[in-house]
Structures are given as structure tokens and as C-alpha cells.
Length: 127
Image (cartoon, rainbow, N blue to C red):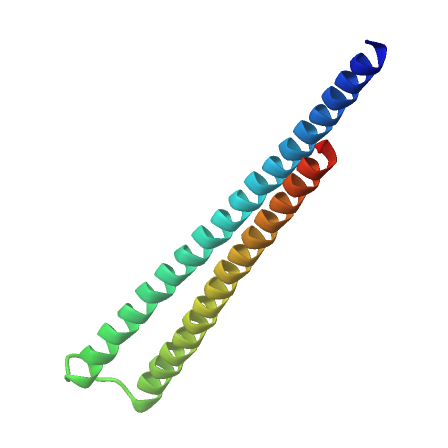
């Protein structure tokens, strides 16, 4: 009976260790998810801000080209340079956002593999 009680206590201790392990991994996943969502939200806001700036510049350029406003070529050149700069920044943010999504997917996949491995190890240890 004492050996059975010892085995039961050992199994309970291992179960508690696994519970703590899974809880810590769950918290890590939640923290990672929150950070990735914050990054994604920030990147989306920046993209929206840049799109709005590009739209404003396009509207101003069209107005200048249509003759609505008379301006010198330097003003148009400046607006076009600003537009090109904003488009480059938008492209860079799009790449960064795609990379963050890919990284998040990779981390999620690695975490799932780690969990599966731990579960297999636990089952093997119990048998």
C-alpha cells in the first residue's frame, strides 16, 4: 500500500508540475499574442496615416496639375518627392507587417510542436 501511495503522490506531483508548466506556457502565449496584436495594430495605424497623407498629396498634385492652383515646379517636385517617400515608408511597413505575421505563425508552430513533444514525453513517462 505504501508503494502505491508513493506512486500516487509521485503521479500527483508530476501532474502538478505539468499544470505549472502548461500554465506558464499559456501565459507566454497570451503575452506573445498581446504583443503581436499591439504591433499589428500600430503598423495598421501607421499604414492608414501614410495612406491618408498619400491621398492628400495626390489630391493636391491633381489640383496643381489641373490648373486650380498656380505653383512653381519646385512645389510640384517637392510634393512628388514627399509622395514617393511616403509610398516607400508604406511599402516598408507592409513588409514589416508581413514579416511579423510570418514570425508569429512560426512561433505558434514551434510552440505547438513543443507542447506536442511534452505531451508525448509525459505519456511515455506515465507508461
